Image 1 (cartoon, rainbow over the protein chains, first blue to last red):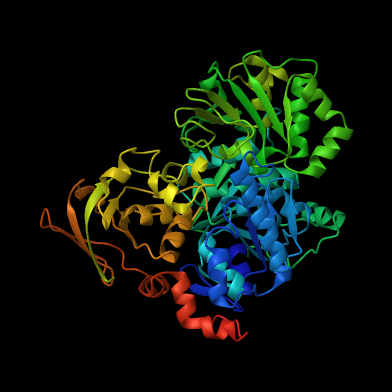
Image 2 (image 1 turned 90 degrees about the horizontal axis):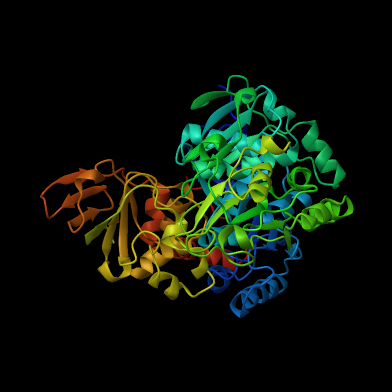
Length: 419
Length: 176
């Protein structure tokens, strides 16, 4: 019987020729990523002393300070300082700070390697699935186990296949596609499963767009969201001088727990209403909802094409006087490119505030927190109660184009009105 | 450890990590996070929870962040176990790893706020002392039971492999 891509990666990582869903295995971890929020400072720094006081392989450990950078207060500054010092003390040379959200930095620095197993102390580690890398989020204690042993126990998950055919219309993006996917299966629809995305529409998408999709797989409860690595992925890796790894693919006779088919050509822009990621409707149903903040950024949708698309809409226009528009590129290199190409200038001229590449606003840590009763449209991945600030604030999730359109209109509107 | 008694606090579906531990408290100490546990759902939670109390919820408890601070905050607030129809994957693993028992039971709708439960972790049997009913939770898998019996992943690693790790033979045996 054939195996899915996820099963093959787990089999490879656990030194087995075959595995099947439900098996428990100990798997060797290829990349262990910690952030500042839930990395060394939580449990790990204290408890590692009892367990040999060293990491199993310094070359496989990556630390990225992104949540509290740049710090908004002394506590956050001290968390960054602690993380930085811990990396030095334990000989972790792959330490990055101020470059942007970890999942984008991981991709740009060449850690998203096809066929490998990556664990990270952030749930959106699923983003690496866009490269055919089994990326998954784990807690701090679990990370401690990985740091001392290089291994993690896994229950081999079933794989759900989502087939997207057809072409996305103008004004409809990868974000709309993943929101629609989450609506179809529900926020717990992929619990303990892997989502594998395939079909002509996925093949047409850029690697950056695929990252948006894999990033949000966890919002349906998935362990990871995989996409078969193709020439686009290999070209991406080659450009940055990264390893092509060992690409693995689902067999034609692999067993999938479900197969869902979607037609991309029929999809209008989507939006997730407060306060659940699966409360997704066609944007027309939310038309006219007043917003106070428009946030463009994050590991979900702060990449170059996201900024460029927003700039296209905002060029020569102004952000509504009652709206604050905030822009945070997903990495320094994206920021640089957008700066060189005039995109940052266009956004700023339209009235957007340009922020540092950071996770801050996405989860209400700094750089744009919402007050009571304020409403935001955001290109990020979660709209839970209290996510971006006050628990009586409301968050709508949509594509960068929809964020830009709402910023001009002061209310939610179909981005195709501006394209 | 194998049998737990406690009074129920009951909640609904999809209690996510931003509700359990709101992001603005993540820079604070674990004790402060515990004081604000479940604030997004019930501001009275920490006042109502009794030591060893059992949190009962519906579908999909704990989706969202990988923050282990969510189960830690609940444990420090006094929660002795969580019973839900099912859990989000990362939360489930985190709870086990920090030694907080989590049970999946399809019959949670029969349990009311204030009921007193007695849970046998070995068999997954839940006795409702208040109503006299008995429910069956999914028995815990072997790796989960091993980690919970040790009191969490750290004591488990320490007990099983601590010496080897300290000696530089840092290889966790393939047990399962």
